Length: 354
Image (cartoon, rainbow, N blue to C red; front, top):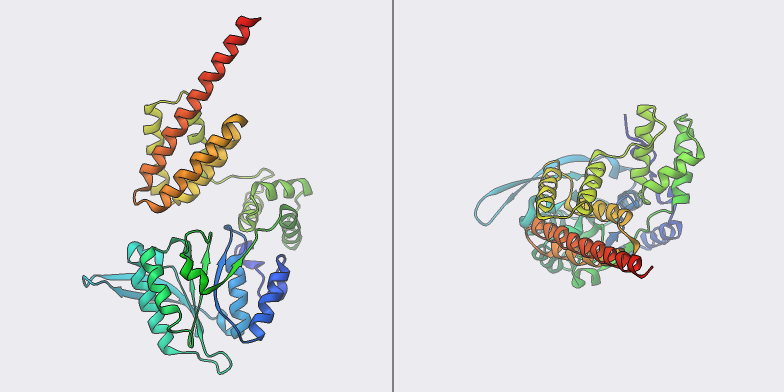
């Protein structure tokens, strides 16, 4: 039984529910036989992968849906063999090089070379497609390797890179791609889609609750559908938040309740606990910032955002993310404590002046 987010996923560019002008542009581009490398980027749950699948179906037809799992073996210079799973059809292959960490460069080189040499299988489409998932996680070495081979195999190969953000992609890669930003759907559009799915599934849910789900989803359509399906399965009338979100919200409360070095150590242990349960660091940081914004005073939010921006960048470019995460926690705690103490002094001065 497929999840609702998969069951009701659009299967062609004509059936997309939002960003329809973009879909029309893609159809015209494909018909003109002038298909470039693509960099498809946007927030999680905005519909990037759906659009990529629709693009492939528009190019190759329904045969692209007949996929299989392939096990790739990558050999390192030290003769160590690395295993990587990929999803492939007769027309394309989808890989996530970041799954093998710093050796992602070898995946890029090996896969591109093998696919390019095999050529296209359809007379009207003389190229195959490589879909690179989570391209924003590619190392600089992998991107440099990618840049050198993109033009070399342009006659038999096209790349579709899927990323959450374009900021980590090197300019030489961007200049060789058509950048396609997939804007997240509005809360109103998410509400419309939820109403449609609920009607199809005979799920009796109030419009106010649908709007609440749409708002809680933070414009992430996949999350909204999963939230509503969870409510349907559990026969619940309340939104059930994921356990990791509740855990991170408790971390945020710890940071503002009597800040101390002991609390920093506790939060570090919480961070390790989340990592052990495979919660991505980027997601931990995002949920934590969102929780802190709801807790702290409006006059402190500017400082919080400034710190978050700085340490998010440090985590991206650094090797040990936990150190930068811990530095953010300590820095914010110090700023929060100073802000609280300053306010207490101001209150005392006001009392003395009365």
